[in-house]
Every structure is written in structure tokens, then in C-alpha cells.
Length: 245
Image 1 (tube, one colour):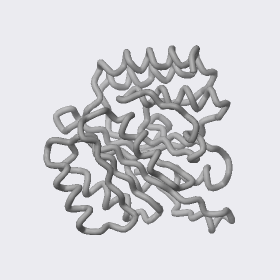
Image 2 (cartoon, one colour):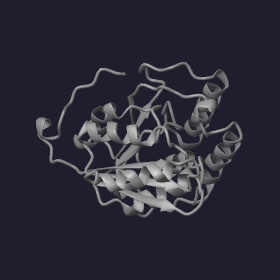
Image 3 (tube, helix red, strand yellow):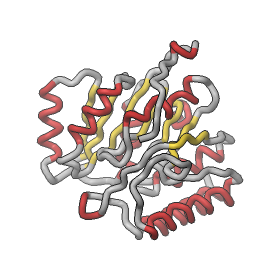
Image 4 (cartoon, one colour):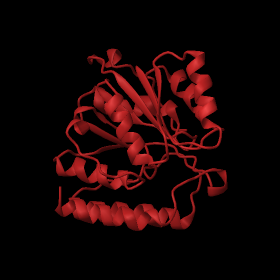
């Protein structure tokens, strides 16, 4: 966990911007409730939108119980069958009404207690898009070597194609002003959301501001869903959107 300063927008003399946390969820029966509770404990979200993407492992029953518990500011949307992370995020974006959107995975790889660090550049008006980078010196659990190679290779391709110098294109923690996606047509249904979104942000002429975050990656036997086959899809997505809209 990185040291963070709990800084409110009011404390730095800025107008408060409302925050929607979008949580795509697929077969996360063990984690979705504790992740939600940690998000709510941070106390910064005006909306929490959970999009269940056709879960079949008991997650729906947990979400039903969350609805019955009446958590404030929490909405649960459901896809009748699995469409993919990108599709779940598009559903969440369309349902949100806040000024800022923050993507939160439904597990503990990423820590909601780092929201203040992620939000500060937006509240200060420095940028419209913030990425939390796992490669800028934050504490992290060692990931598999080939996962690291894939991440860094895809980020390098992003930098070459789009003339930027980001360090972690594939990060979950993407935080941005809602108008960034207002007219953005996102076609990705799966994990290729990450390169498509990044490509389209950069093609808008926006510069991505990165902050260091901690990372507690899980193993495939613990429920990790991204596979090596997603890397070629991400590469093709980066190349495609460099030359087409």
C-alpha cells in the first residue's frame, strides 16, 4: 500500500466533483461484497455501479442480498449472459451521472484506499485522465515474468504508435472526466477495452497523467481471468485504432 494523504477537494480549494465507481463483475462470489465494502469505506463515491456480466457461480445471489441490504448510492445492473469486461464497462458508463468515472475490478488486486491519490490530479484540474501505474515504484506482489513482459510490450507499442510515454497501459485503475467517454464509441467487449480506450483517449489529444499504485495480483487458480490469448487481441486493437476511428 502506498502512503496516501487523505486530501479532499475542499482542502485544496477546488470545487468538488462527483465520483462514480464502476465495477464490472463476473463470477466473483468471494470478493464482490468485501470489495464493495472497502469502496464504500473510503467515503468518496457518490455512485457505485456494479455490472454483473452473466455470473454463474453464486455472485447473483450475493448481489441480490446487497440490494436487499439497501446500501446507499449502490446500483446493480445485470447482463443476462456473459459479454466481457468491455461490455460491462460500457453499460456502467451509460448509467453513471457523476463528473468523474473510476474503474474498479471486483477483486483485491487494486486497493480502493488509493482513490485520493488517483483523484487529486482531476480535482486540481491538472488532467482529464489519470492512470494508476503498477510500474512507478508502488508496492506490489511479484507478477509472473511473462505477464510482465506482455504488459510492458503492449505499453511500448502504445508509446510508439501514439507518441506518449505512459508506463502501464493495461492497468485497471483508469479514472477520467465523464465527458471523455460521452461521445466515444467503444466497440470492445472483452479485455481489449484497455487498448481501445487508451488509443481513443490519446487520439483525442489528451495526455494521460500517471500516479504510482500498489498491486496485489492474483493467480489464475484464484480467479484471475485475463489469459495470454488476450495479448494478441490487445496488440491488434492498438494497431487498428491508430489508423481507423
